[in-house]
Image 1: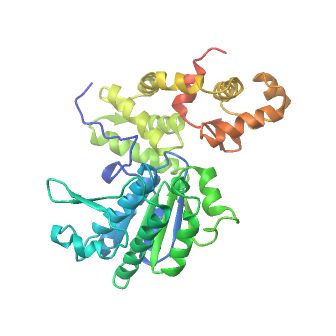
Image 2: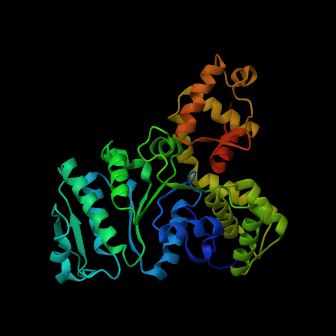
Image 3: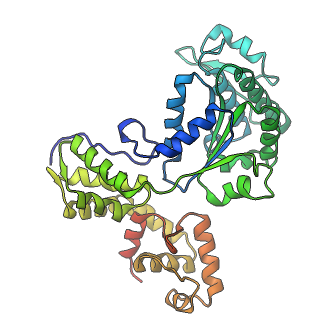
Length: 378
């Protein structure tokens, strides 16, 4: 084993040399951000949605955009969401108040509901609202930030990015309607809504009954083409001063794919184990090591499931998936009374993203969880 720095990264957004592909999607996203077009960015979990957003924003930075990026899921309540919006607006590069302590009063004059302001050791202001922030006041803050962005749009791109948008209704069922109203009022602001919970995002932006239906252009992330991933793996392994053949790189993609995060995870484990070359045996050992790391988590995940859901998961893992899970044969194999019982179990598992429909079959979404399930009894 060598002491080379591991060239792969997984579990959080990737940037720089660890980013691969997505040129078409990024170009489309940057173009729309630049030209006041609102977008919904959809992808399954671990497909690199946030990485794509950050990449697009890094390209757009050459235009000195007025850009506010908030991860909705990381806000514990509506007060935290309001504070994140205000903080993001204050940090807009090139604005008169940007990072200047003495400019805080000027910035706050543009927000009707005033936050509490604290300063970090390096002089950076932190905006906070009390936990009892009323919904109408939170709406005013959102409207004021939107208006502020609109005022910047006369001479540069103005963008509001709401990542993990599927969580927005946790802070108020009316918020999609509010955003639609603000988007109509300020058409020069590009509203970018990104989410990975397919069922929730479809209800919020894709269903005809949604207030956001039809107001955004849709960009969907699918698998990165295999040849791109194979080339990326070989190039990255070479930077770590190790070797891998094209066939073994294809094996990594086949075993862990098609989710980019999972491919990088298996590549990471394989690189760690390898001496001077990543071989097929090394990839198998890397898979075993990745599964071993998560075994307690996988055990807890299986135990919390209803018995029927457990059996469906195990059967899908051991059979490599099923194109006919509603058949009598599948119901018998998993010990459920009928296709209706299987359908109910699959619906819950699908909503939780434990299983996914892929290439005409239902499979366990996480290949490492699937490998662990194949080693269980039953």
